[in-house]
Amino acid sequence: MNEQTMKSYNLTKVLGIVLAIMGFFTAIHFLGMSFQSIGSDFSQNFEIAFGNPAIGLFIGLLGTAILQSSSTTTSMAVAAVAAGTITLENAIPVVMGANIGTTLTSTIVSMSYVTKTAEFKKAVVAGTSHDIFNVLTCIILFPLELKYGVLSQFSHSLASLFDLGTTSSSSTDKIFIYRFLDTIGGTLINWTGGYVLLIASIIGLFGTVKAISNISYNQLIGPTRARFEAIAFQNTFRSFGWGFLLTAVIQSSSITTSLIVPLAATGKVPVKRAFEFVIGSNIGTTITAILAALFKSEAAMSLAFAHFLFNMAGMILFIGVPLLRKLPLYLADKLGSIALRFKLSAFAYILVLFFVLPFTLIYFSKPKQQTTPTTSQEEVITNN
Image (tube, rainbow, N blue to C red):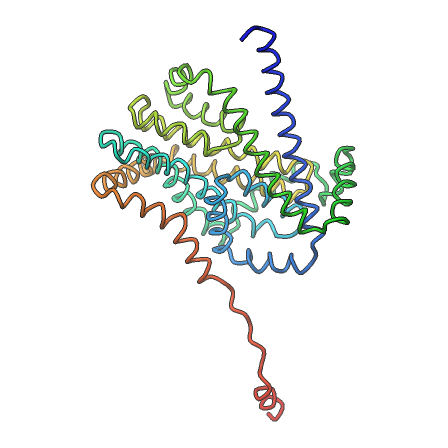
């Protein structure tokens, strides 16, 4: 490849990622507009579905496990909060669930080593340490959020430091591009209706996140993978820092954490360093929600900060507290030993954690519909 061809290739990649980022912001804005246009009935259904924190948690988990993109799930939650469709308090459990759901990819990657006995256990430990870390963080913070609102209060305080206005419109009206998108979005809603724009926005959001991830990964990791392996895992700071940086740029913790599983399985990277990389990527993935909340409402920015605080709290708990530091890897190691002895248990773990448990709890947590009194019941009430 000559120099001129290389320049054209690089220019194409840069143009591609710029267009993908523009598409991401456009999809977020149209998503918020579609939520607002659909009306009160849709908002009431949202409130019923997400009014139960347990349902919100497992919808976030299940949705992200299916989409395989926590960035998409959290960005949708940010758009819904910005539009006023759901409250900050109801959206936080969705983000917690998304954090768990996104770990499915690295766990599935670890299952690809099931026929390689020498590498399988390390692969399972590296893959499931991400699951266990997020599950443990959720076990600690979910009840604290329900009881005291720790994440919602702290995130609201952080968001209040930014001059975002009281509503999404008051902040975005200052920017020409958003006025232009309002015009386009309004026209599309008039032509097709809010539901069509909602579906198109979700598809566009998912597609642009994937495009950003793939282009960034190919540019950053593809050509220099061997060098990356040599410099990124020399100590705790580098492992954490590279995990954060790559995920912040690539906007996909699924890709970056899946990258680490083969390295840990083959012994190129110690499992401890792989876990530190995973924690860094966990914080790096919060950048997407912050970008999605830019120029939106204070509530939307609060949700983005809640996502950040959730992952930061997990890092502080399981890296900063000596008694808890070894717990995620200890549990992952035990799980790896069981998986090595009973291969089917590893697949059962995936099926139960990511699909059976969410489906079951969502079903049994559904709000009971109030029954209207029958005619005979009404007569009894009237006579009394």
